[in-house]
Image (tube, rainbow, N blue to C red; front, side, top):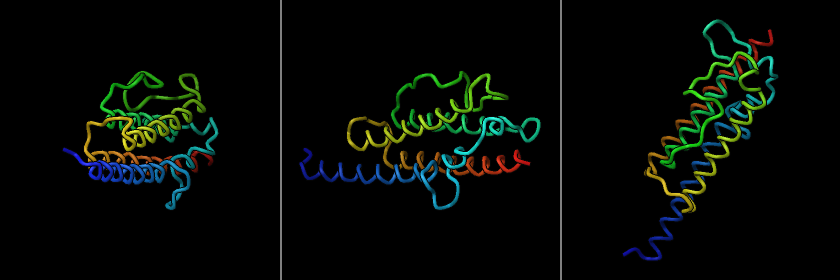
Length: 168
């Protein structure tokens, strides 16, 4: 039998866990990472013509990188909930070829990244508050959130580089 004290301690641990996970997610996405441009900052000043500029044949552009990250964040949300997810912004899997704004406008790409970030933060909060069950243990949740944050930071760096190259 679980006592009230044990339940309170478990809820306190879940809340602390959620606070840490939210902080980690914000470090990679934004606002204001200490290490330089986070994903949100990297995307903020990209004009549409730069978003679809490709540094060479077979290389990804900023729009593709941003949408890829949104897809990955969505995958983390799915693993955290253990539930089937709604359809993504485009049909396909992981990397989506975007040569111009005909498939997806730059503003829609940015909205998709922002939406998926908000959704994963909400899931983390809902799990901690007991509003949502997860099939994952705390260590697995931590690993997923840390991994997708490293993913965001890595791709934010790529975007920063592409912005400089495209401005030449």
